[in-house]
Image 1 (cartoon, one colour):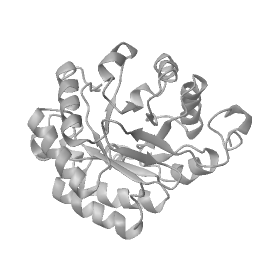
Image 2: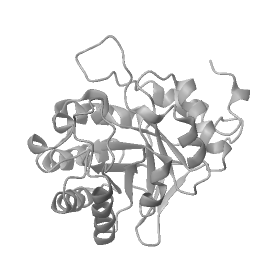
Image 3: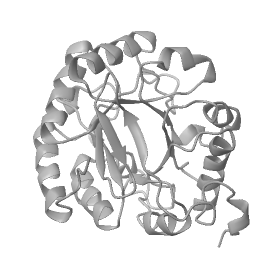
Image 4: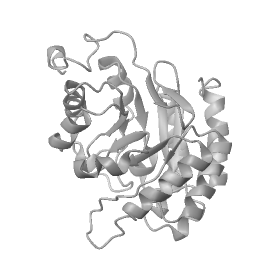
Length: 278
């Protein structure tokens, strides 16, 4: 077990009650997550066009999602894969945010891009950047909420110590995200470690959400693992949704259609009727 004294900011010894992270407000709807507030973040892996993002945003919002996800900068394993629309993608995110009023979540990969993320409500640190300590330290000096994803080979201890880098700078608005780890199993893209949810809930006061899309890599596995995450006590979900998954420029196989997302949201309410407490 991790030594409690190492966790000066994120550990239960530092704060007994659960942290509630406040997202948005002002130009967008105010959303609370953690401390009894459960929320769903949904949207495409990559922003592809204004029309695409608006269609998906309106659909997931109508189904009950509280926040919109969409990547403009996409770090990919292969340098030949689609890398995102970058600055143009940020413009599309900004426009969609204004039109829908939904708080938006987008991944930041470089501290030099901070100015471009002025209209992004939650800054996401992807699994590849969980160990980017310069980025984490800089985000600690920001006032915006951070979603910190677990690295593919990271332990729970390492995830919490990455959170410490951010909190040490003064930013305590952190949402931890379990998104699967690399194991010897090849049946799924990664192995979703749902045991990490109750383990983390016992060790930290920070909200814990689960991303079943990146964990499984297959749309058919997303709903059952999402429901399992809710039952395990997660504070929220991050789900990839696309209006035409077969045509998606990135991660189409793991994206669910809006129809499947609507059914998933109905199932979530059966497990947790008061999941969308404001």
